[in-house]
Length: 352
Image (cartoon, rainbow, N blue to C red; front, top):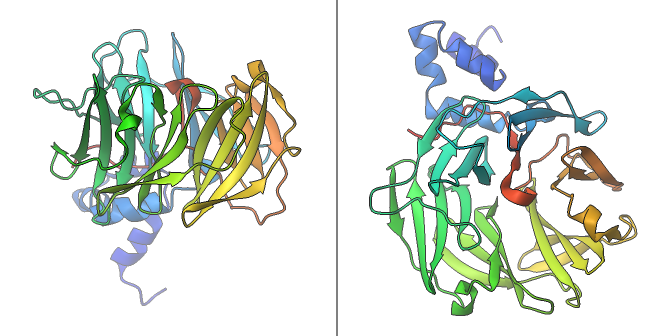
């Protein structure tokens, strides 16, 4: 250790600080401010921040916005703290559409504007432009947040307007939108298909696309973030004689899907993607059939080796897994109702 340069030792120490302590450390001196603001520092600090102590659940209701830690030893929520939105809103009319590395992509429902927001640092960036880019309409549009091979954070916005599709990419690096082609089946543009938010995993954004009636078509659309090409893969082979919903979760860069099927009682199976094919990991019973009303209370899924089916109030079910623990919780890319998110506390900035 005595042979290491002071700069290297300092870098190693500071990249292990909690995100809020990094923010305070910037005021120590000009040299620290410069070091803590470099992209290399932010990238390394972010990679070391995906631990259970940095995991948070953000919940929005009509009166408050609160953040709660996830306590890893009992897999439940800790005490909440109130968060003040740093941007103008009306009665908490904020929908959370996607998240990645501590950034949230949100929509202001009264203006339809898209924003990138880091709730830990409070920094935010408006993505709307005078030429009508960066405006989101619920039930018609889909959003995915990702980072490409050049470490540029980007937003993919799929817009459906009166049968006309537009696909646009926002780049944080150049602070602008551009159009890209969408090459797959045109029927997916119909409002009869429900698009999920994008889940980023292994250099690809994945969307579930489900037809809005019993027995309808269900597929997964994949977007390679570096080639910017779309392709379609099949849905897991689940029964189609009831409602079908697929919830995608990225665990250590392996894509998983919780596939729910049923009518008055819902069955949940867990699948993992290998190549372009789904392999069933478990099926009921580990989770007993869930009544429809109770299933509607599920908000998200998290894991630390075992899986936990969560609601706003805490655990609904624990799924025992005969697997080596994953060392920490991994955030989901889905939160029912757009009024919450699971995220890690980082210093990643919404703008350059």
